[in-house]
Image (cartoon, rainbow, N blue to C red; front, side, top):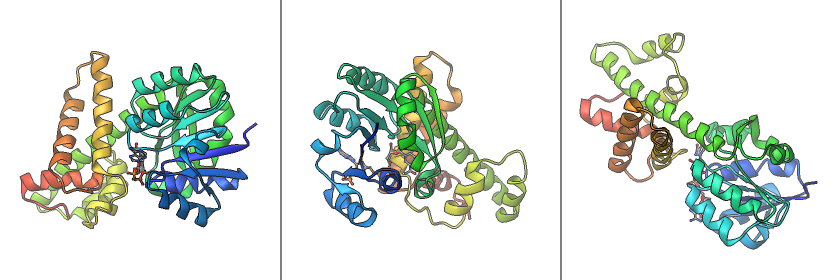
Length: 290
Ligand code: NDP
């Protein structure tokens, strides 16, 4: 029986995800490092801004922080009570999920790695894809708490499997992003109208989430709105590459993609959206994708 839920980390994703929880739970506690955001959330959505000590004593605790390092730091300082389930929606490191699951198991609690996909608009609409690794029974118990912000909610395997799927997903996003930049620059250099080309490609086999959403909504209009920070994408491609290398696989394309995204990250302006990675290619080609 879940009486209380808590959400830790009210960033671009967490703020919107936590807003759905009061539809299903009478008591929703929220905590954020910059505490004013938690107070603002409470005033707007009827949640309760609490201390980190209180938040970590809920029956189900969600976290959505930049990396596994911040999650580990909070879990080890403030372990949850016996019987609790910690649902970590961070795009994290599979090894860390295994470590946290075993740490919490020793306390009689569970850790589920439950990263999400669908960007801030999916968080806002409560339609996120949630890919979950960890104990199957804990997944069953947590399902109803995840449902308010989830669309597809899928148990994908043991601890770490959810983080692995998310990292590979974002590697594919990054590869498509870079390939799209090169492809559309090629079209522009050959005198083709990019909007007409986009319409054709989105009705053809070369389409992807990048051509359907990222290119028209962020790049061609030169808006690059900051909703998913470039350093976070660079982190995800790093996690995916490390996973492939740990499995001793050849990684020609994954290595190159990670290298390009990391270079774009290191050379981009602070607070760049992930889509701004294409500006590195634009600086090489001297052609703007617009
Ligand atoms: P944001 O940078 O917007 O938010 C980060 C959150 O973590 C903030 O609440 C921040 O608190 C908190 N935080 C940062 N450092 C610490 C710390 N040391 N201790 C405690 N809290 C801390 O990130 P997003 O919401 O965009 O992303 C969160 C996770 O979700 C990442 O793993 C990301 O890869 C993933 N993700 C993001 C998507 C997106 O479209 N943005 C889509 C899918 C997944 P404070 O407000 O005090 O800074």
